Each structure stands twice: as structure tokens, then as C-alpha cells.
Image (cartoon, rainbow, N blue to C red; front, side):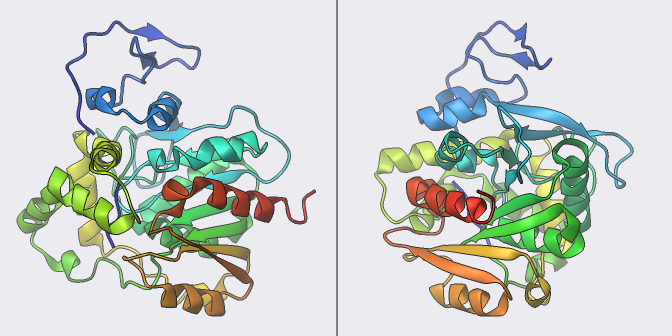
Length: 329
């Protein structure tokens, strides 16, 4: 299941300085580890969230070195259950550029976390990026920095990541929010059997602008061409990091996520959100997921495609805020 959003940039001459968190930033405030093409993004919400991305060291069993892991941290932390936002396949925390500020304004402790192998982490010494490694990385990040049972939010393939995590680490998850969930595919299927040379050729296509533009056409209900180009630049930005291709191939040939058998065993209260005009995953699967999860409620959003948290952030934020606050007022 491929879902993306899309970056390109003028050559920029900048000076660098040290900010209070200790990593270098450009003169325009972007972290120095982001590709310079971030400067070409026009979307003010994407630019603002990009400036808040930082890297936290996370030690996992599958890597000899700590991984500098990219995320957006909350401005303040509180005693209630934190909200942790994942993203879809081959995407990043910038997917949350419109909804994140609304959740924060509502007073929720909100994290936006990049899944291992995607986003903007430092994978110069490449760890395994299979399902077990992705799960371990999220667990260790949670254990080191979040430390409280969380409301875990997964859109598209991120829903499979969330279900897999809740199944294996139920103590860390208070509730789940699943958005247009890609949870019934059987991993990466035949892609896992491809020779590495063929897999690398296929992965190279994933960051091509024409393919990303087409993915936007499928993922969203309506948008102008200029907006599609800019959103293509946003979703493609992480693909410009030097280790992206190796990490994505490693995930593909590992077999990917297959969580359909875990769904009926998930005990956490779950909010399912679905765009009524999703052209990528049928609404029939929304109904099936709602019937198979023991403790779930389904809300569909009119005039929205596959990524309602990008297309209809006000609606998604309200649903999440109401769900998080229920029973915790």
C-alpha cells in the first residue's frame, strides 16, 4: 500500500548557529539535517512544522549504535495520556502539518514520530528496518521519552504499525486512532521476493515526481496543480536523504506488515476515521474493521480522500480531541 504526499529548492547560502536543543539550524530556522530542498516548500504549515523537527537518541536491540530519531516534541508535557502521531508508508511527520497545531491548541500533549526507516532520522549506520525493528524502535522511544500509556494514532500503513505495536506492547497503549487503515494487506506480497537489484530500481521510482503527483491525485479529493506540486515536495523530502533507498528496500524484502490476525485481539478502545471518498482503500474495509475490533467506533468524513488529517484537519482534530478527552475530563 503506497500513500504519499511530495520537495525541491533554490540553492541556499546559510550560516548556522546552535539552538537551545543543541543541533544546528540554518539561518531560516530549519534543522541542518533536513535536505536543503526544504527551502522550496511553499506551504507555511509544512515549513513551520519542519522547523520543529529534532532528533533524539534511541538505542534499540537491533543496532550497535543509538539512532538519532526524528520527531516533533510537544511544547509542554502533562500528566494525561500523550497523543503520539505516526504516518503512512514512506512518509514523515510532516504529514501532520495541518492537524498537529490544532491538537496542540486543544491542550493535548502531542508527539509526531517518524517510523524507523522513513522520515528524517539519521540512519547513516543502517539498522534493519523490518517490522520487528520498527516496533522495537517505537517502544524504546516511548520508554525513553514518553513513559506513559499513549493514544497511538496511525493513518494508512501507520494503522498497521499501531495495531502491531498495541498487540505486542499493550501496556504502552491506552487507546488507538486508526485513519483510513491499511491493515488487510498481506505484507509487501510478491515485492518481498524480488532480487535486490530489481527492488532498488522499483524503490527509485517511489521518489519520482510524476509518480508522487499521481499518488496525490489518488489520495486527495480535489486540489489544484500548484498545491499538488507543493504537497509532492513535502511528501518527497525525506526521500532525498542518502539512506532512504537502502532502508525502504530492506523493509520491502523483509515482508512488511501482516496484522489482520491481530485485529480481533486488540482490546484498547479505538476510534476509526475514514474519508468517504477514499480511492485507495474501500469504505467496505472501514465497516469490516469496525466489526472486527472488539471496542471501536467509526466516523466517516464527507468530501475527503485517503488522508483526511491532511485534507480535513478541523474534522479530524475534533474527532481526536473528543475521543481523547472522553473519560479523562
